[in-house]
Image 1 (cartoon, one colour):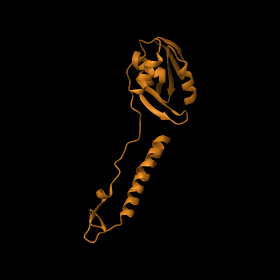
Image 2 (cartoon, helix red, strand yellow; image 1 turned 180 degrees about the vertical axis):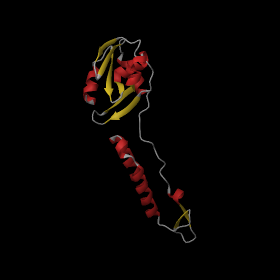
Image 3 (cartoon, helix red, strand yellow; image 1 turned 30 degrees about the horizontal axis):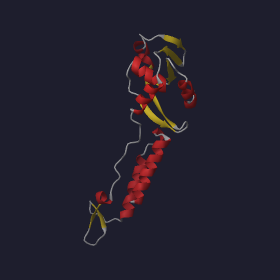
Length: 176
């Protein structure tokens, strides 16, 4: 099921909790996540920007192995291999939106951008000298730092927005 389909399904959700199987987890999104958090178990929700639908999405999940324990008191309306639908109290849109806006948005870790003063000390000749005493030009050290930042950035585990923010951070470092 695509994110767009999940959003459409959740927009019409008034009084159910829809759990979707993702790997070894059951996940609830948007209104279902809110109802699950308030009525079943307060698992930590995650709010992320999803570029394909141009909005932030809230989800929460738990391992499939703990489903029997967690859902023991819930009224199950439908159970299939890839989804479970639970009965819920009416879901009020304003409450969901207020709850959602109070959740922190997941953003990439902001690494400290090194300043020239962090990398160099001035020598008597006016050349930049790295703290180990090696004479280097300021530009070559910044390019080396940029290369190390790029090598250390785990692209595969980042969202497109996190990649864009990382790139903006590196550009800002070059512009200094």
